Image 1: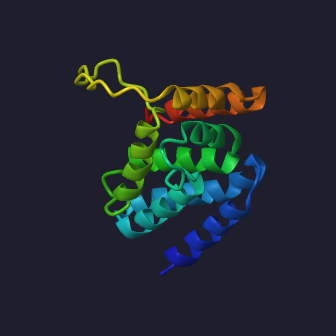
Image 2 (image 1 turned 90 degrees about the horizontal axis):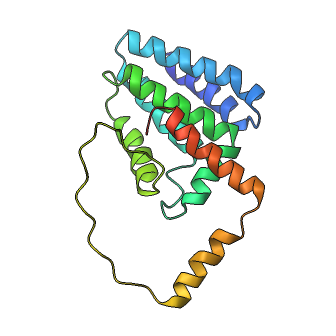
Length: 172
């Protein structure tokens, strides 16, 4: 079929792009391909596209404990930003056609949730109370504080932009 070459070409162009301008055409092609596949209820191309978009976000390859790394990547990488936006659009608009691709979507949402980057909807029920954890030694507390204190303004800005992107995409 035509789906393999179309998706391979657009995904290769997206993978090699480094700026928003370079990403514009490949992301438009991927958006059009997703819309066409959904219109004809073809789940295989959407599933394939979603699995590749997830890798472009770099989110699943980053441990959830590295919340600052995830937020900074989303705040500073046009490729990660465009991929997350495309991923969330496909989930929202064409989710009823997606089959195996849901595992890719859920993987991203779980990492974002575990990293604390998702906000809770105002109408959501109150979560159960979290059990108290044992206190870690002062050496570990010092280390955690030291890691947070060494961010420069660029890292703080990138992290803030990454957090706002997650909310803007409607994932939060």
